[in-house]
Length: 142
Image (cartoon, rainbow, N blue to C red; front, side):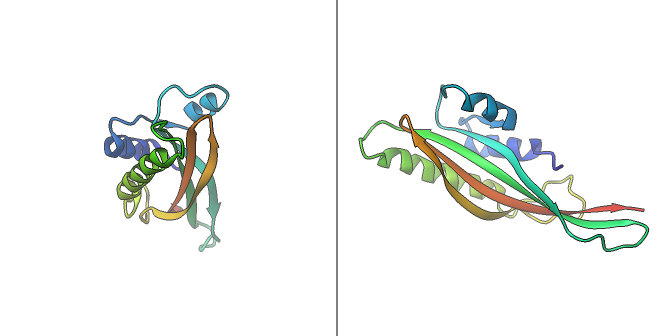
């Protein structure tokens, strides 16, 4: 599986001072109340492999789907427009940080690309949004 620490570090730098955490932190949070917003989490979503292109060795392309979950709360207005504006700015910063970036440790890696985004929840004045990105790399072994 792809090590997401480099993606978390890259987003933490791009979103500073917004905290960026991993899947374990998000899982713990979903059971309780969120303390501070905005916040972001980088979570692995899926991994799929293509056909092995060699006989007696390994040459297989893997596609990894990564989610970036963002939580925004802004009670400045009753319509939620302020939270949506904050969400829009955060999503833009996430895209700028990840799109066309290839983690250095991926053999034969291709840059991240945007796949889709969508609303996860809007509850307790918090907008929860997830954008999905994909990156491809090649596994090789003799």
